[in-house]
Every structure is written in structure tokens, then in C-alpha cells.
Image (cartoon, rainbow, N blue to C red; front, side, top):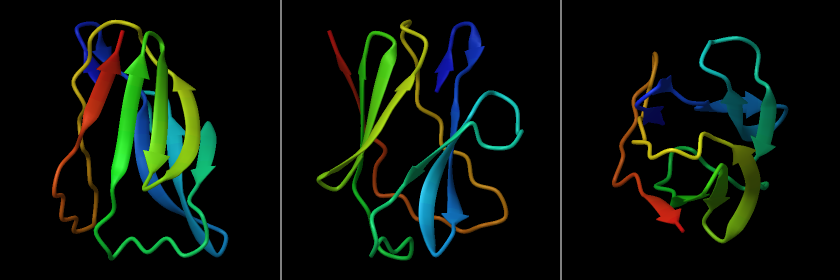
Length: 100
């Protein structure tokens, strides 16, 4: 997400062992700081529903009905950004909810 102060964490879909995960990185492309694994059966070729809910300095990430975890983010207002490198992606919607 981008804030008035600049870029926030980067979430990238990556292979992790036999499955997939979201790699949570800082604002640089260094090795992942944290991996949030998808449950078995996740298929990146199928439309997915991801939910991002922000409350203060915490961003909760969920896939379908499965909570993947929370990460620390800036508490200031931010705009989500979607980045893809060397891949084709079809996106129906990116939704982020801010809770008071």
C-alpha cells in the first residue's frame, strides 16, 4: 500500500514447497520477511477472493474463509497497489476495508 510517506509492505504470490504463499516483504526486494501459506488446494489459476482489513497499524489478510494472518502496517491512510512481474494476472477486484 502507498501512504503519503511512501511505499508500504509488498505482498507477493510465491511458490513455497509443494504449495503457494504470500511473501510479506518490506519496501525493498530482499528475501521474504515472512511467508503466509495458502491452505492445500489453493490454485492460482482460479479466481480467488482475498480480503484485506486494516485497523490502525494492523492489516488482516484472508483468502476465501481462511485467515492467513496479520501484519504490521502504517496506521495512516493508504491506497492498495497491485504489482505483477513476469506474469499474467486477471483481477476481478482488489478490496481493502478500513475499520475504526
